[in-house]
Length: 282
Image 1 (tube, rainbow, N blue to C red):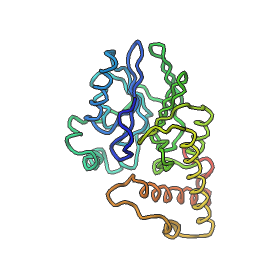
Image 2 (cartoon, rainbow, N blue to C red):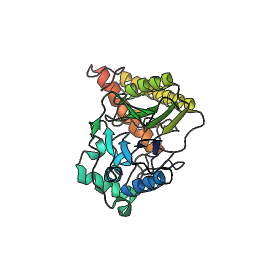
Image 3 (cartoon, one colour):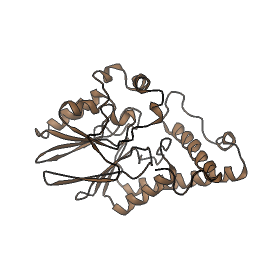
Image 4 (cartoon, rainbow, N blue to C red):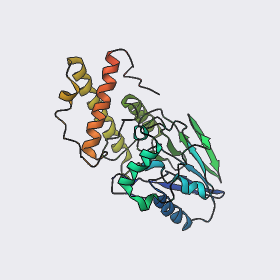
């Protein structure tokens, strides 16, 4: 079940939960305490069982600023222990202040950081609860260093977080494009029937979303790699892209431009022998 869908905007991520005989596992920490309380109210329309775990996709504000509300109702946090993101470079207080400008003060009432994992996942962790099997997977630093995907093998359903978006333009500013491409191969091998992306509607054909993402990044890597080989400056390489949206740092044009910068730097580092562009950072 989705916490929100169809809007594809900052501050409105998708979330879900799995009901078992022994309790509920929430997926996605959402963007604010207010949103988390809404998800918890929805859970209560389906089950009176305790919320035992919250699995975080990543450590960006839109994926974990509601975690405190799940913790307050007794949930243990399952997450990758690497919480570093560019949005937090100025410090935790600055990240909260910046996020206030996205969701508003009322949504943030009651906020505290709660993304430190009680159950850290750095590889694959299988949770069996009430007869349900739920697998948390760290695929590497695809979208961010702290990425987790959540796989329900019996249902063949994948909660991908921001590793996938319906338009194919996943952000890799905190990750690496080659790791993302490898992650897409991993997703294909799982053959999911349903994929829940980080934002926007669930696609009818999940394979199309994966293919669109792969094609976009393959083309971007080729273009930026060619620019680096020719000695084209980053400014010139980005000149053909639409300008970013001034007030929307993760809208489509902004994501395209920020991804191009990141991939250009990846290719530049690879050319200098500082990083293997086929492997990326883990």
